[in-house]
Length: 265
Image 1 (cartoon, rainbow, N blue to C red):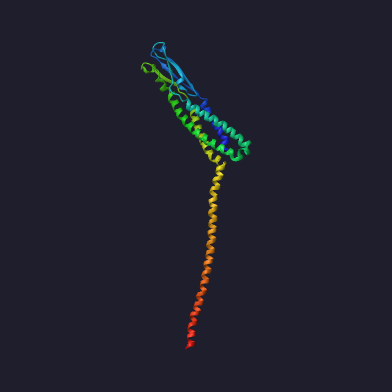
Image 2 (tube, helix red, strand yellow):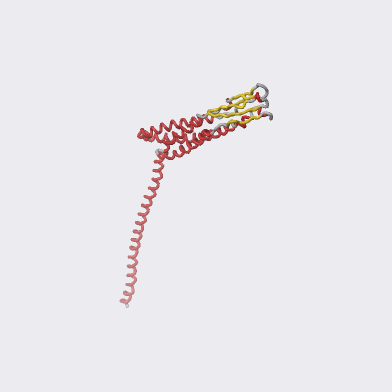
């Protein structure tokens, strides 16, 4: 039940906070010659974070000439993979919810539904782990590439001591941090659901039967062994009583011998 409720919701949060992101930073270049200064340089970037394609112009503080600068890095592969996993997990969660509610009999028919559900759950658990880890590394690269201090180092004007370069506004990464958190929450949710889906498959019931059969055989063999032991005890007792009879007869014969000897006397 938790899977039905939280899986689509967590998937929405994951791809919405990552795929819908757009941010930026603002820089200021104060040249020695104030007429060449630019105190408001805006640098905007967004999903899928192909930062090397983000370009902007800054003053060189050497006349009216301006320098074209681009950010460094490309985290599009990890970001797009993460969002793709989230979207497909969301669609599968919705489809599974519909099947659980309206097609329960079809789901359990021939045990095919639980087996497919189990395999898909394992695959999505693995994809969430890989996607979240890759996107966490990609986000770390995005933070470094968009750090205003790192961007200022790309400007030739900022390498001159007579010019003053400062960061006016840094990018806000809170939603991207949230996307990574929801990515790992989705992994925990899907991985935790593996056991519950496995219990619905025939593999779980067959393993239970396999474990119960040896126990039954062991208990039956134990009962037969106890019966044979009792019968053996009763028969051995009978033999001991039977062997007692001949000993008494022999004793009688031995006592009769002195009597005959007296008659001869």
